[in-house]
Image (cartoon, rainbow, N blue to C red; front, side, top):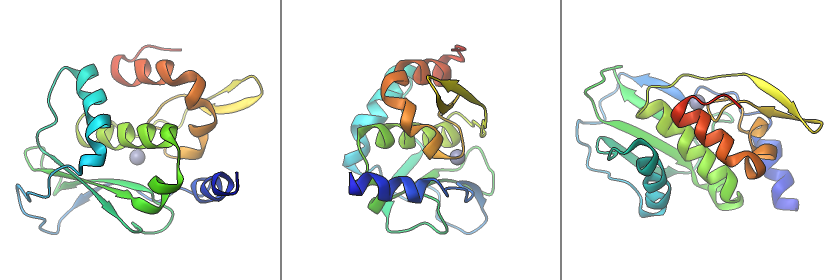
Length: 162
Ligand SMILES: [Zn+2]
């Protein structure tokens, strides 16, 4: 429980930009690959999209900057360039399954589906929930993701309102 409250205090302030066009050169086909820890989440993503994730590298970092816990980088905004997703290992290690999946889907949403943020919310049983995995503040997703996971995924992949 202590760990959870620590995470929530980090996430409650999550407001840093996590979707950026980077003009620095990472190198096309940087070859970093996808950390094997992320494979099961990428497999879930692929099973919904029916497409393989091929042009994305996914790595752990320790700290991204500010309160940002995940980041999708597209070089120069060029859609043909490889993407890089950074995930803060400290949050990953402390967080549960819900935040892990929601965070990976969020960043793949930016990097693969070219999704932008959606700040919509709804009140469910007295809890304010993000309406979308693409909400910029993960703390608005987390309290609701466990029970509403399928609604979130259907909205994310198919645009199904809920
Ligand atoms: Zn984002």
